[in-house]
Amino acid sequence: NRSLFERGAPFGRPTVWLYGQHHSFHSMAHSRDNFAAFKKAGGRSRFHEFEMPPGRGHSLVGCPDLWSNPLDRYLSTLGASKP
Image 1 (tube, rainbow, N blue to C red):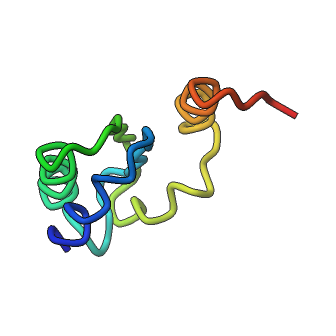
Image 2: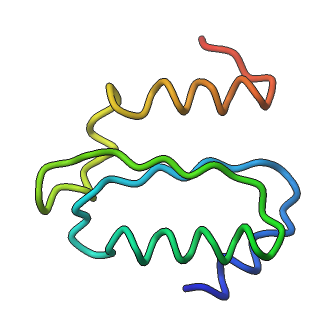
């Protein structure tokens, strides 16, 4: 995984990373390590982690009340506006 994130770093535009605690596939430490590799390779991003119930971190997408504000802030940096 790490090499994929390193290869994505030259994209040149900011990105946003949204992660739920207690992910059933990847630990938060694993996700943070990938983020660190991305940043070290020159990637521009911000990492957000959200508290989720045990084993439910992969379901973060179903909890827009948690991530909508950080995503709106990210989109505003790109010049996007709310519909």
